[in-house]
Length: 119
Image (tube, rainbow, N blue to C red):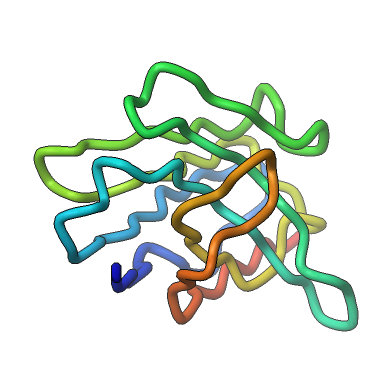
């Protein structure tokens, strides 16, 4: 079992930056691939980025590649999403997810954090 709590969302102007954090509880955190997903109003939830259990591999959706960076600190049981050059189309609720396999989300979700990018 793992519990996830996101933070760091907010309102930012286009071109700005935000850093999201996902604090995890549970001893198995270090064993899990971790990821971020997002859901915009009226749209399906979509995958954003994944970091492997060791932090050695990262993967990104084409829409955020080059602008977002996912990372993790296993000593702090925390995953981060650094978001730069934000665009209005990045506006969504961002969710942390644990135990992704082959790009498919695991069973563990956080409650989400709202990111709003104004033009």
